[in-house]
Structures are given as structure tokens and as C-alpha cells.
Image 1 (cartoon, rainbow, N blue to C red):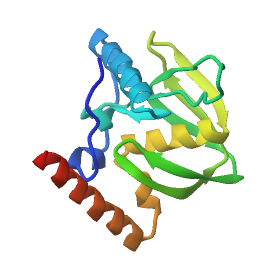
Image 2: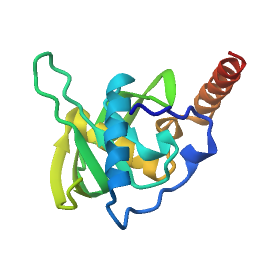
Image 3: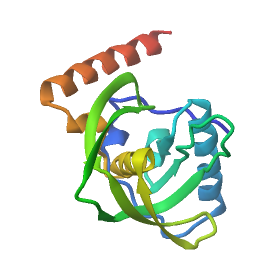
Image 4: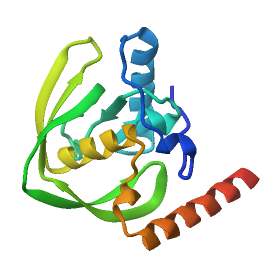
Length: 172
């Protein structure tokens, strides 16, 4: 089931999320819904707070090549356990901040530990777009948006434009 994506500014997007202590069928269904929502948007990642759920859950799939099999990942309680000193800069966007993009510099490679949908612990090293995406989504779990990396004036400008967009959408 596709879920509505919250748009910035929304106070739920700025809250730190609670860890998932018990992997329930409801949380697995939420993860499936989030993947459907992400693919439909279309996007490469989505965090639970973006659909109004304040739990530590993200989904991602950074496969972009035509004809390449999708690789959907569901991560409960994801955490970066190591990061490279080398950095990379990507133009980031966000499904909660449509039509706005900015260069963000992050570690080029990260080791991430998480719990998969079956409850098993997973570890993997991510590089390139995957590394950027997983860090971006984990930031959401801490209440941090990609615009928080920008200079205050640019961040305020984007926030004002998003507030105006939300007013226009509310008016129909």
C-alpha cells in the first residue's frame, strides 16, 4: 500500500526515532508499504518518519541501471559503524523536499549494521550512491534533513518555498 509522504516543514521530520525492539508483522508491512511508496515516488530511499512513523526503519534501492535487477533493502535500527576518511559529494534530493537539490559531502564509504526483515543482523560496506543514500536515510532517523548541511540562508529559502508549496497544496 502506498503511503503519503510528509513534506518539510513538518515537526515529525525533525524528531529522533525510537529503536525497533520487537519486529512485528505490522512493522514488516510498513517496510513493504515504504518500498512501494519509494518506488512509486520515484526515489532511491525512504525513512519511516517520512511516512509519519517515528521508528528506526529505512528502505533503499540504489540500482539505477536499465535491465539490472532491483536490490530492495529493508533496514531496522541501521547504524553506521565505520566510515572512510575519504569523502564524496553528491547532489542530494529528498522525497519530503521535492524539486530541491544540493551538493552534500559525506564519507565516501560506510560500514552499516542493521536488522533485516527476518530479524537477522546484517553488516555491509556501502560506497558511491549507496553510501550517500544510506547516510541520508539514517540522518532522517535522527531528525536531520539534507538541507541541514547547507548554509542557513539557503536552508531558510528552501524551507520558505516548501511552506508556500504546502499552503498551495492545502488550498487544492
